[in-house]
Image (spheres, helix red, strand yellow):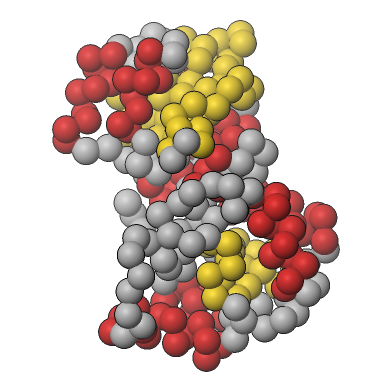
Length: 250
């Protein structure tokens, strides 16, 4: 399909223009006009470009794009990265907070779906837009079983803190670096929290709040949204999609 048609649909579906981020989102690098194959990945760095090209990609669809904060010179390692895209005529489309926040294919909605939970509401605004979800297990689920579901349907856990009830009913979910919202999740009635990573300063927040916490890794918890979005595009437009798992271990 035509790149312009595809990116216009993505911009609208993900509300790219409405969600303020840490850098420009959407089509970050314009490549060839026709898109026959999309490769999805979490990141957009040189190894990602190489994998995408080896699979015949016309577009790389990612969660973490290449623009963060103030503009930078196209020189050094950043210049090499940009030149690799331009030389390959490869499109780069990035959706960061917009993908976290999406109620259907977003990282947090998709994590809830994979765990068999029902999304009740959004919470934890960033730049005025809620990106996390609060999801319920109406009949309750053993916390150990919830951990097992994560490992079966998402990936290996990095750390599990069992400071809450044995039976889970309400789960706050924020992919990536969401541990700072543990107190908010507790205040909103969650007994369990799922996120990617933590820090030493936040380690005791879960114990103080009496919450169970599953840390799935920043990378792992943000693989699911790109996959869900890519499959949505494949089903809607018939464009080929392939996800490449290139974990950072973090």
